[in-house]
Image (tube, rainbow, N blue to C red; front, side, top):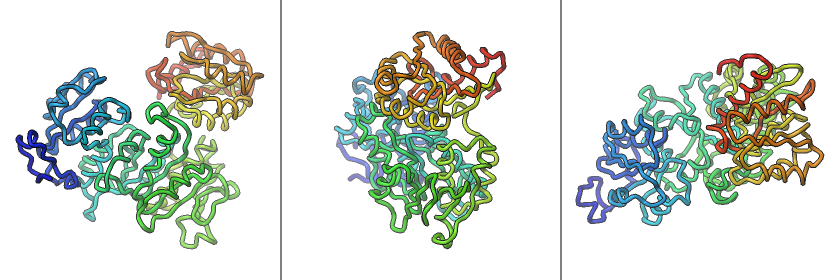
Length: 516
């Protein structure tokens, strides 16, 4: 391999930079040719970081906002904006030594296939962040610890919960990653952190699966909250999706937290290649074993991080207290136990966990009560974008009038309808393609009243949903928007879908929605 200094002639001679040497912010990144694919928030953070390091950066994207397009040359990078069904000539000519891909680029994308066929190093933004994590150090001279969180559902809530618990325990912590703040931005924050709580999508984890030992994170603790089919079009199969999720446990040093009620997560931990001495910590809604967190007589307890875990436990909070704060839905309690396990692995005391829960609020569009009128409760869980999340909502609100449908992302909804469909009062089906849901009800819950909203205009959909629901619901009922599908077939985002639902509800009952 060539030395760290790469001259212009190296591009022609075929010499390759020793990428294993690039394991620190203070390594010599100068002149490294890096192509960044995509120019969303994540792509820009990667390009900005690499430019600051002195790399030669080419950003390749199909589209770019006016702001990012203006900023790319300002940071010293170059920009190519064109269709990416084929590899752009400018990218081939650039001859990148590394490609950093935004997580939207699926494994079957032409540029990703070209990179792998060409033998070009392929990183995600998280690998880059791990390599340069020592830009800002703690008082003891070490970089921030990382806690990794993934799962089909509950990632964002658990990430926020964990960060809140750590902060309440006196640590400087930040929720980053797929939650909306690029991890590279946190790594470069001059204030520095003790812990980064990193939410990881299956897309980001697929890129981490490509990393060697230099680029693969070694987190303090990690968790896969649950596993159900999702993003199958992106990954290509359920097995590939599962294998990507399992990467979260790789190289964990202290605690691999898993869901005892989900055998897939236990198997991931059993198969994981971890640092010697790392412990498996289980959680569920039952009585905990000696290395678990769980519930005893309505009390959430820790039997994992106590001195005599075989004969004692620490109280964290109670179901009654969580219920008073709107946090007692079963899937929410599971998220709290997972977050508490991660926080306890970092020695956060139970009192700090209780303090954090006392001020915690769920995100908008996550089992959010938008109105109660004439005995009917209207609930916005637009963030339930897959069947697993919708199943949790339906379990929390049995007998609801269920608003379901949208972009199913290649996932078969039949199992959800078979398991939960017969327990709803009625179903209102939305989305451009509704036939799969209608057929599932015909097979598995034929006695349930079924209504289709066939409006094609976005602004008309929720008005019709609310009109239908208002005619069905009775005193004591819940109308539940839990679509089990993505929103992009008819709405800008799950947030847009939920906001339009809430607005239609308030238009119907004559109240003003509260500001988000």
